[in-house]
Length: 123
Image 1 (spheres, one colour):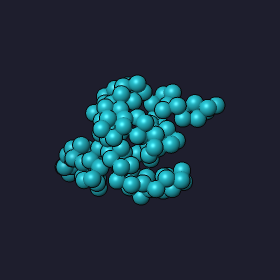
Image 2 (image 1 turned 180 degrees about the vertical axis):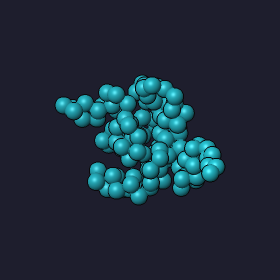
Image 3 (image 1 turned 180 degrees about the horizontal axis):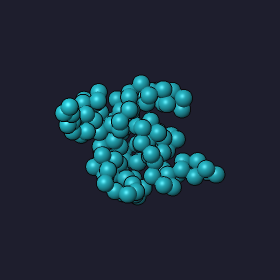
Image 4 (image 1 turned 90 degrees about the vertical axis):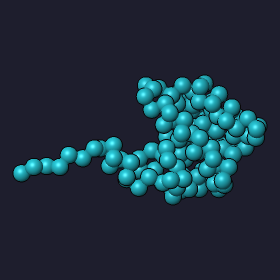
């Protein structure tokens, strides 16, 4: 009996990828994000979704990196949202930390040192 070979990359690409979030991690959904945000007393607006898309895109572009560098991510977000006010603007959207809180909502693991258990979010 012959078995048909299937490319795993094609299967992953077909697994219900949301075209609005092309870089979303596997298994992540908008409903999951909305639920997490609700638990953290946030109502997600289009501005929040824009940050989530940017984060997911950054992580997808750095998928081969062993570790996501907090400073590089911070600088990339500051540059991406410079017109709106950079990181200060992001703190207005994600008061729990523009990186730590938005990563949780985006289904991503926050970079090392983005949160300090004794202090809270530092980024």
